[in-house]
Amino acid sequence: MALIPLPLERLLRQLGKLPGLGPRSAQRVALSLLQQPVLLADLQRNLADVAAQLGICGCCGNLAFAGGEAPICEICSDPVRNTGVVCVVEGIADIWALERSGVFVGRYHVLGGVVSALNGVGPEDVRIPQLVKRARDEEVQEVILALGASVDGQTTGQIIIDRLASLGVAVSTLAKGMPVGAAVDYLDEGTLSLALAGRQRVA
Image (cartoon, rainbow, N blue to C red):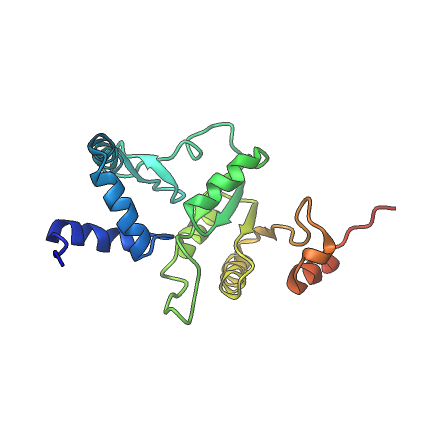
């Protein structure tokens, strides 16, 4: 059996490390690209553009055009956004999800992960110190915790609450419970418990 050429083997290993791509998926992607030279050339060009033109916002941790040592993203540089309200998220994809709703008009803070004792990730390993500094320096009035409902997400939220306590900043969290369009008999026990605990009076 013919061996896989070394450059392709390296590519397969690299692709296999990406989220959602295992060894078989990586192989399919790589072979598809090799069979379509134009697509491969476009991908090379786009990856080079992303590497050269994008950076991390020096304020919130979102993606930004790399126009200097500390690039600022479009949201942080938007004068219409409410600077007094900061929504804390785990990753950049969470910003995209919230922005699709078109409801939130404040700014964001990307932690870049959550605190996880099991994985050896402490509060200083994610951007909690930067959040505390922002809350103090920018006179933030409210911090919204938009973190996952996992144990690590809840632990991270509690650490943030504790760190912000001395600053007098209001801290809120996203409502949890029944998603829109869901049927009660399809919900798990945890979601139902949160929905019951967060029930609202209507009459």
